[in-house]
Image 1 (spheres, one colour):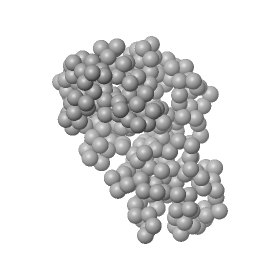
Image 2 (tube, rainbow, N blue to C red):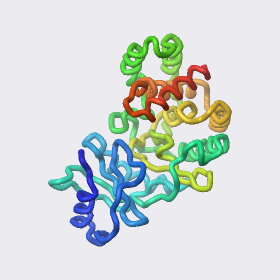
Image 3 (cartoon, rainbow, N blue to C red):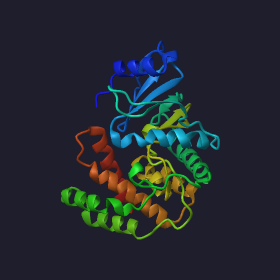
Length: 285
């Protein structure tokens, strides 16, 4: 839906008049599931772009304050929750603004960043996940069984015949489906990707967008090994995480699934990253 500055201004004026004089403008890198706006210099307004994403607001409001207390790095923290109106039909949120630049390969040392990201994930997974939201439709099964995307993956492979090594991809996909996470569920961010990782002075400085937060198998949070890192930094990341081969096979499966279904995207950046990912996975295999 069209979520404009004017709409956000009206929501703030009606529900949080104490902040109605603060400047409102879109953030530089907004997401797909939500639209995000600056609210002054210290807050952001985050609005789900559709009904399917509304449960994320409730979930973040409940769990992020608890997680933030147990993490060394800053993460998204809710300040207030807005209610639906005639003009905007979903629950929405106001969060603290986190400073930093979106990570890219020019503002970090890849191998050092790989170690920093691994340290964050290990700390994140060490937090008690008791009573946390089990992976399911609310977070598009991140942390759940990769077989949910079996049909979609195989369908994408059929469409890509002649463009990539189908046989090798099929083997990698089948290997990903052979194992399960046998330990207790751990916290899963669900979208560990460059757009949600902030850096300052070349170091990981914050993690944002926990909309598809859940608990379960952490393999989906490891896909950046192939979607972002090069061979050397990937080895650092894998070594730092110190997980079993089956978990890495499933992580590779998560990365492959997303790359296959976005391989022919009309968005140039998305399609280029999909090709980079497929090449990294095939070369790594």
